[in-house]
Amino acid sequence: MTWKAPDIDRREPPLIGDERTQLQAFLDYHRDTLLWKCSGLSAEQLATRVVPTSNLTLLGLVRHMTEVERGWFRLTAAGKDVGYVHNYDDDVDADFNALDVADAPRDYARYRDEIVKCDAAVRDLALDSTFQHPSPKRTEPYSLRWVYLHMLEEYARHNGHADLLREAIDGETGE
Image 1 (cartoon, rainbow, N blue to C red):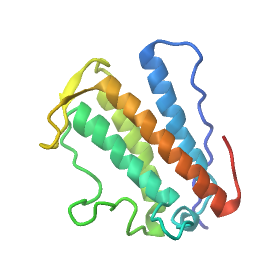
Image 2 (image 1 turned 45 degrees about the vertical axis):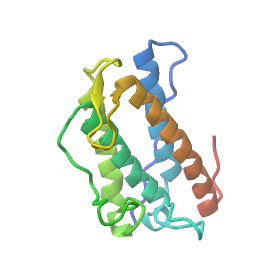
Image 3 (image 1 turned 135 degrees about the horizontal axis):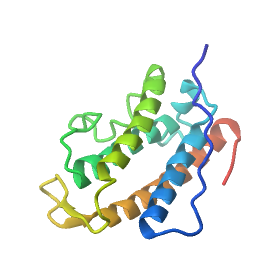
């Protein structure tokens, strides 16, 4: 049996709520949107490069957002010593390159697991909490509020990519 990305029901953000509730709800909506763009596709389809001049794939976006989630929430905001999933010393685009369709179910599950771990890592931090980025090149402090806003921007951009990739794969479009 061929693995397919599972269906997902996107959670709609509430129209009213405090700042933390709204930020989390919109982040969850964007996370769900990426998974929704992948739903029903086989591992081969998720790893298909539909734009010849680009290394973007839906599976690469899932892998990339796993790293982005981990990097901003667990490594930076929570200060956890968890490292990255891929080795970026050898390949700065490791999350988009060397895709193995056999790894698609694992990569998909890793993304879902990372989201749970990231939410848990920052659950008790205030939005005004500040921290240093682990890179010695970045010396300015960041707030958790900034991280949430940055993640919304990151997902909005990449979900636009995902929408175009999905349409090129099988013609599916959506909001």
